[in-house]
Length: 451
Image (cartoon, rainbow, N blue to C red; front, side, top):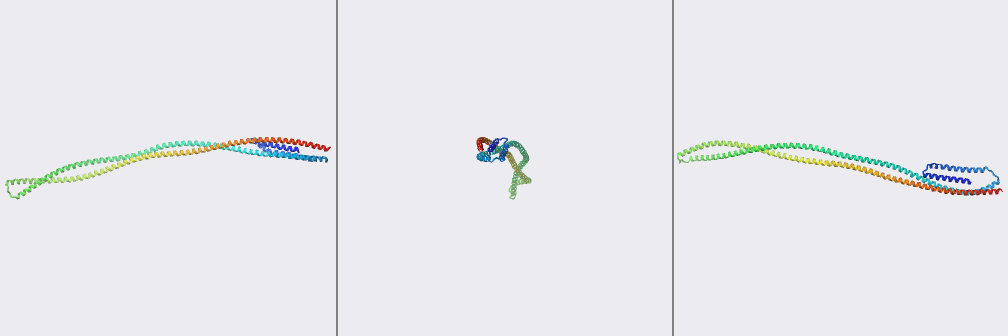
């Protein structure tokens, strides 16, 4: 009985010691942890099988060895004594074994919890490392994309500058060619107008010369008419004088003749002369009247021509003034068109430059926004990377702490197991001594009973 209990206790202590070693190896990351875990159950089973076999052998040996009735009485007494002692020792050993098994169960549970925590921390560390690798790759990709976008921005800026220069040159060429064509057309129209004005001026000069000539001829004609009118007045005065004389003569012939004949003859001669002169003067007067009438007709014709010439001159002056007004209007319109074209060209160049500048600014803003977004993403990635690194560092520190705690707990458990094993060995020695004493007492009693 004592031997069997001792064997059981030794087997239990071996199992506990092996379990503590397995826990320590697991905490330290030893390679044989799984094997020891798997090998725990067979050890227990083998110990139980050995103990069962010993009990069977003992019962079998008790059955096979028949004894005498006296020895049976002695054996019954000794067996009762032994059973009492054994029951006490079994109770004590069971209490110790239960305490040891409870302590080992707690320690194994603690070891398992610590192992699980260590495995979880290792998995977290591995996941964090993988995530850090992914984030670093993503950061590298983002940095490469930022470099590519910067290169694209530089290329777009160069293209914008080139387009600006080319567009300004092309626009200047097109505007200059258009303006040159328009100026040529306007110049040709101005030259035509100038030629027409020169023609009109020449016609006006010719008409002025003709008017001058007609005025000169009219002045000469007027002078001649004045001379003729003076001569006619003189002739009329003479005719009136002669007619008065003739009347006087006729009146004198009717009065009585008081003068002598000589006077009569003289008077008759004078009268005849006067009549002759009168007849000649009448012919001349008729001729002069005819001439005067002809001159008056010519004067009327010249007046009509002069009026027509004046009308033509007035019409030509009006045409000249209208042409001058048209020329001034065309020249002012041309100047206004040139000013408008210059203003349009200036506004067009300014608007084109403004449009190009706005396009460049919009492209720069878009590139800046994209760069800002990428920088924010990169900063977020770097922050996440730093946080993950910090988490990894904290996890590694926690893992180290757990490993240290596990190692310390394992050492503490080993020390406790050593103390328990020492106490159990002391108890086993005491039990062995007590058992030896009991056996010696039983032997003495047997010998006494025999004797």
